[in-house]
Length: 456
Image (cartoon, rainbow, N blue to C red; front, side):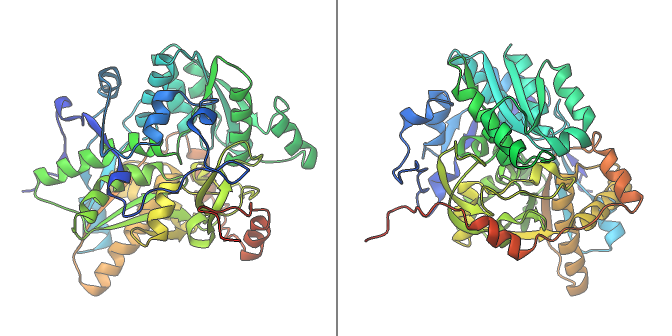
């Protein structure tokens, strides 16, 4: 009988990260400055160390993982691959459903896969402080843990609505020694400007990024650390998909479709990019990013150059965006409340090499509860988006009688998200399908810049 749980030995933790750029049919478009010219490495050094910038701009297929990083990753890696046989039975589907479970990390999510190397590389470069933003708190928790591992001071701007909804995420960060601030704050110009326009501003990831970048740029001992979107972040997450490929091969399986929740793109890239290497070599596999209908970057956004933050402190990146001034509603999947999408994920989506779907909030919690009852794990609200899409596909296969092998990344557990589940279980949770008119309004302020420049 096929095992329902596939584990690896510690010596099977990948020794290298996989860089999808090496297999993309077209090279990534460069980040641009406000003048429309590509940003130089020297400009980026204001907030990132040189060793991470090398990874950000690399086209090498394999990049070695430093041994001190692998040593810390081994505290919880390799993570298990589990076949959801009880969920299959509940659905009555002919599909085989597998999930890669990242909730076993110290912070409870996949985010620790990149926080550890980022803290390591910054420490190696001589920095003692890191600033960052966080939405639901998974990224802030992960960086707080990593900062403790490398004796670094961590300062976190947490989206205000999540700061209020998820007090125990905040406590978790503070337990690891981090300072946590509800964004927008009165500590930065970006925060003060936002509060002047709206004293009740609930915050957004784009605004929290502005505050974190502003602080990092103002101090020589401080760098900025990002938990998604950028190339080097997605690179670090590919440890997930590499392990999953090895685990599935051990039991003679390979997915027809790979799913993951998609906000900035790190979780999706982590599970899907290693399979994209196979797709680029001719293997048939569908890769699907799942986003909320309330923050539909790929499914309703435009593919344009835009800032990664509200105040325009970051370089311009070519991505699917709802506009950097987009202010998302206070949905409970706080890690998906971002106006844009990773440039790498965006380019692959634009070239129709990957897929995207949007799912409503209430349906995602219904999927999370169904999964918890069947498999015993209470998933994070972000993870529920991937589960919803998998369930929908499994039910389609039930109707058609077509058996498929489905794989998704369960990006983290929901142990600190029970207030969200309380609202769902009491019938107080609502859907919010972001109106196209509001999307178009936010898009009006996009910079009129492209690369290569259009001929006059």
